[in-house]
Length: 203
Image (cartoon, rainbow, N blue to C red; front, top):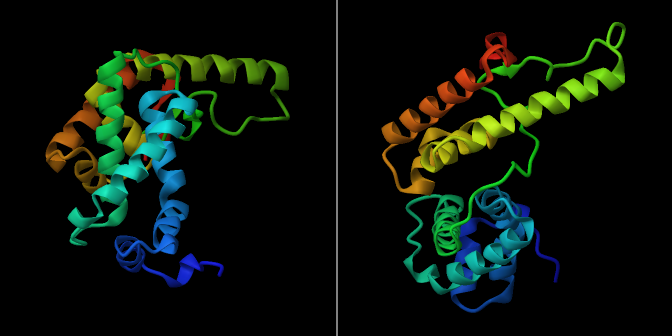
């Protein structure tokens, strides 16, 4: 039987999984695996490790399904598990984060000069590509210099487009704390980039 996720709610999938129904667990994995992987990969900055931690997240989620009461979104519940596993991993190996896996060109709080649509009538494509690469590298370095707690809020809000409420639930923090950390990080990135930061792109 082919599972049609468009007709099944998270609550139904959880209920099936709790009863040992394979479709329930498979449905939850199909629906949320990509989200969990993206979140974990951004946290640990290693796609192979992220694959392992994603699997661990779902295994732990199955063990803890009895604790999911349904009073919040399942997506927030499983991301909270992924965050806990990812942070534990980082602590155990004392990883120093490296460059962003995903291109930061979708950054929304401000536009970086040179990252907008190129003027093909005036710009040499090779020069423009080199300039774009240089700007992205500068942005990556600025983000990587942020304190870990601020960087997580910055990435989740400005790169992943998550709401402050969602981030607060993911990280088990007050919404006000999330806002403060994200905005403080934004200001640090802006100050670091200097003239490369274009406020006309402010969202």
